[in-house]
Image (cartoon, rainbow, N blue to C red; front, side, top):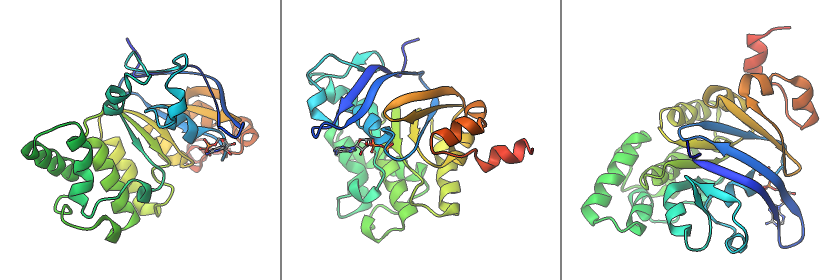
Length: 249
Ligand code: ADP
């Protein structure tokens, strides 16, 4: 099966010379939910930014990112941006329209849908994230949790098959985290979720990749990888409480 996402020897140095990723090989199958964990500075956000060409200087060299078999390059960028929805860590970086409906409509409008189709898609996406009726409201008057949902609705409205989510629950309170986790669990898509929320990983991702110093240091079944206390501590993480509860020592 053609992987939904494939990285082949992906390396990246920021313009100031800092090496953020090196030699990353990764395959994610269609429909898979993959957790991406690691300490601050591990390279998680940089990896996600590669998935839809946010880093423009990457578009001309030898391709190392493939989405459903299509190599990311300058000519395939529009196609790949349609396929991969990227949720930024801070919803305020993503929301810029006067109303929720306008924000969610932005993507589908770019795809060239007719006005009536856009309205329908927006309504459906807002319903999917539990925000039916929020269309006329201003995104800036919403709670953090609601803002995150609006951002997610924006991605769903574009019907991308791959969701790349950067710390989707980091700014939410425990209830918000639980609700957002459940919401993500109900969405059919290939998901790559960079997060410090290990409970979310346990709940949604059967497989997890640990990144540290720009390299993959572990890749395997979540319960196995996250239960390895030595590995977790060596990479600035901790064994999640949910697993401790399952295997009390
Ligand atoms: P994570 O998301 O795992 O916290 P990042 O991808 O943000 O890690 O960062 C990876 C490395 O790249 C870090 O060493 C960080 O300091 C560096 N980095 C991130 N963004 C930039 C940037 N815009 N310019 C220079 N270095 C950066």
